Length: 343
Image (cartoon, rainbow, N blue to C red):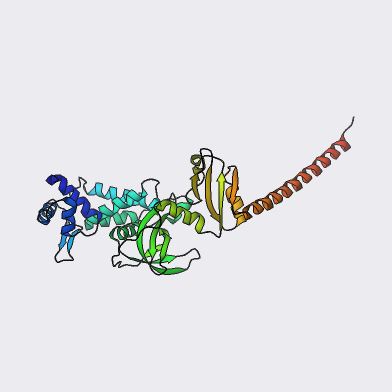
């Protein structure tokens, strides 16, 4: 059995991890009796942590927002600074810390008192970030935390979704995970109306609460959700698909090929396989060429024909440019012959 102080920290962590726990489930996780759980909950309340309890067979314990900031070793100014920093990191998709920022922000906002929430909200509402081009459609952190809570609590989501063509549809989904790239956030969810897994760009999502009811999580569409989303946004979303062997190591190719441009698989120490998509095979030729690597087309065969056609057009342009250079050389030579000679 854990010592009391360690058990209290473990209990607090469990309460932050899920929206609601039954007394029996907490007792099982902590290896104690339900009576000990009740005593530990009382201790947390004495320390300032607001733990709500609902009676009955369907009841349980839930960590709520309190009138005072619990003793997290943060004063008011520090708590506001942490919340604003987490919002900034989550909303701007800073590489490597975005997902952790959303999880931490969800925990912090759950216990922030009202007066501090107002300060954090004011700072975010009246701060204008200067973002680089692709980041101009930054995600609202409030939407991110809302989706993160729905994933955590296994609650159905209803939202309006703006498609590529600008049209809006109402969607009902069972959210599973949030996935971030260097530019965007995506929600992986089971679409109940279409009975299939879908990937949604979070900056196009407008939640329509209330959420619920709860659902039993399904087996995800892939073990590696990052690769799953990458294939969706770089390949499945396009009309033309291709598989190309890049004749450079995967690590070298990954410097230029982002997850939104294609997925890379190792193919020995000196090559890798790129799976990618484009609006057409002609665009695919440009897409692959601009990567700047030597390559070999694996599929489809039609891409070879598109490359030949592009080569012929380039040869024609170079030939015409060469003829023009020759005419200019001859003209220049004639001008010099007409004015040359001894004075």
